[in-house]
Length: 223
Image (cartoon, one colour):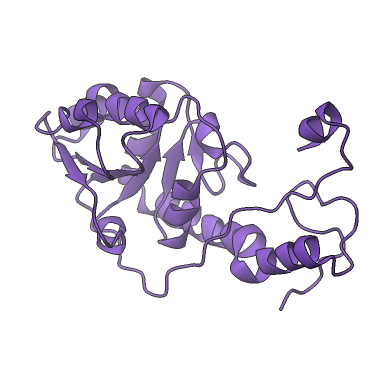
């Protein structure tokens, strides 16, 4: 945001985060070793991530945990559809309700190499109380900490090892989920973001700049 403002000689902008409400009901993780990736699977960065998961990450996970599977959820391109039928891989395509997909998953994996914007899919996983393994690019712009609310990895072998850690250690998975829920509530809950939007749009006493995490410096308790 600061670079954009400097480039176009604008006042310091206020960053308005994406928002995601926590799900109202949570299913326990099934413990079946199911990996989940959700997104528009015709978008090139998501296509690349799906291929990395299906062809490089999942085989490594299955070498240690043969029952592990991968669900790719979202409208697929032909390239992504062709991944269906690879060992352990199922391309679900578009579904009207994602809640059952998250309920059936043990870990959400987001191995994006590049792309723009912040990752709604990561916030959505937080909202559904599922642990997240991701690349740094997948969480760019989000107020997350490696080893606290997500596990970050760079390469397919590192991603596979991180996934295996989560699958093998329910205590680690629980800790990630608990911290991620707190992050969601602190930074991305509608009650936090709505006042920022109101101030920016209506000029309701909005200061010239926002805090680094997107909240107003004097945010206080939002209602």
